[in-house]
Length: 408
Picture 1 (cartoon, helix red, strand yellow):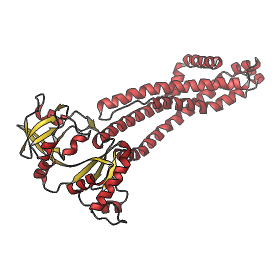
Picture 2 (cartoon, one colour; picture 1 turned 45 degrees about the horizontal axis):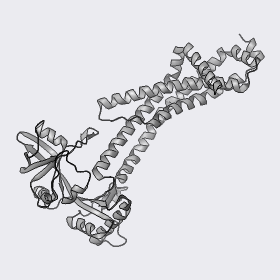
Picture 3 (cartoon, one colour; picture 1 turned 60 degrees about the vertical axis):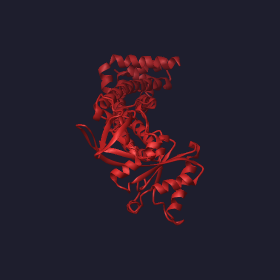
Picture 4 (tube, helix red, strand yellow; picture 1 turned 45 degrees about the vertical axis):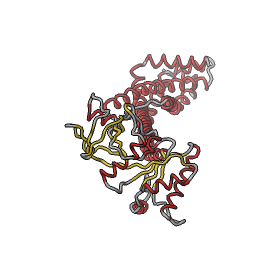
């Protein structure tokens, strides 16, 4: 251990003695590691943001049934899905009655509409209609005021729960509670304001209004496009509840045994899997492109180390004449190469984090520095120094002491 520390000390002295040359040598590594850390930090930030948004919308312990599957794999699947019938309240009731693994079932519908309060007008705002069971799902909350009661929803009372962004746009700093807003010209009383959820890729998740499904039907028509949220009796029964819901729907729709499902059913994990599948390829390509600069940086390090070996030929010859073994010479040259490359990696990590934070500050992209990305950056830099230092180290170790001492 003491020998390793001494070798690192000697390497740092050599780097410091030739600061400009050392900086130009590791510049490629700095750029590469900076790029890797920046890309990884932004991707991890986006992954966390998307995961939170999906779990907040669907719920970690629930699943959603809708008219269409989350994604169609082929054109044939897409064409078949277009013929799927809409979900109905009767089907939601059938699912609710069917199995013991199912705890709560709610139906909801969404539509864009016009919301006003006095002179303030919000066009194309998301209006969401829900059934009384909505209070059992974590996606709905009230930071101020209260949720609509199940009785109010059952009776289709003219009450509304609004998003934090909607409240800000319509009322500013004034309290929205017990104020009357108009949705498509119909009056609704605000009873609560949801907690802020933030934005995803610059799109606010807080600009919405939730009203009873019966009121929603009166505003937008008797055959809304429903989706059904199902919560199992316990998280461990999620798969059983999904099977029961599937059977209940197939029985309700009188599907033959060989007929495929004419509806989509998915959990938050399903959507996360689709997202990760879409972004993994992009991530690999970006890191691969950045990795090319590491190869260039490694070649520069190898050339500089060959020059260092040439400059220190007499020193190497003297050390061998005094008893230094081949492995001692290789160890010293490799240590200097690895140290040089690692210093560039550490600088690249610091610059990458600063750059990621700067991008996050001026764009909707979040940044998150993962500990493993720090280890990855340093590990890659050290590996580059090791790999591209092997040839110069081998050249130095194979020098003949007599020839080395005799060379000017």
